[in-house]
Image (cartoon, rainbow, N blue to C red):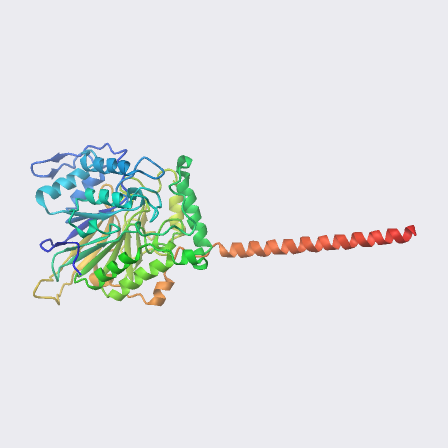
Length: 463
């Protein structure tokens, strides 16, 4: 299957990626010499785009939430366009420098997908109005040609290849919004409630849904979709027919997390299982990149499946209003995390501040005439803080470490946010309630019998 775009002359050595980027509140000057694209980083590292450009990436991937509007409820297409235009033209933000580098040297590819905020409504899925108009806005922002097949799809999913075998990379970008059904308890994340409290309520309803395992007990929830059938068919063909030595699958929402408060594939268990089975059956080298959650994280296990999340380029989950609760929540739900190659944070392997990610490939001595290299190709994925320092890392691993070896049993045993943690409390509460009802009923019956006996005794004495 032919990819949407192909760059056979680009041998990828470094890919940068990130998500969750707000235009507002960025006032750091970005110094750029337009003649030779030289960067001046000497005075200020507070702008994350400075640090991204220092990595000299061949590719930059937007993993969703490219922009945010000021509106807490459903955003109009006009509001979205204003934010896209500002990101493209406001030099103080810093993204413009990446565009100039791309335009003048043609050696940086920029691709990506959307999540709920650049889609236009917190937690929205296929119920979104004006989806085609919103899709065109994102594709315009990414400078996608009007002749591209991406313009004719019902969704922004896409694929791009770089290089040729045996040094080919394929990026498969999913759209987890256009075809996604509502949550089991429909989210009120975009409801016009004061103080953005709708987002907090949505987190709670997801926790309740997962805690009661409603996804398994309610048919409508059990069969709910993240991707529509067209995208599922497309994804399976893209992966099965891939000739790439490394396949990068980009999802705006997390896949492996055990956190029941966040949006994820795990909130749709049958969809997560389907995704992992397709990856497993493809027998390809695959790594997953994701965003959305406003922290950095590495999930999975070596020689099974690895997912790296980079989220919060301009804000993080410790910002108001979650604050200190974010770290406590991530420590509570940690069973999905990867624990090899940790850098900077010990065994926790998550990072709470603003961050971006990089994926670095060392092709070893692989060349066109020697497929059995003595020094095989390796890959490492890192999460960096704003200044560019590595704070999380998979470590440097051979490509084979990114080939899924999960059996169907292993997939079922993976940590899952749908954990039924509230069921014991419901059972205990139900039992206590039934016991109290039984005691109350027994006492009422006993009281009535006693009253009748007393009435009978009184009548006998009277006679």
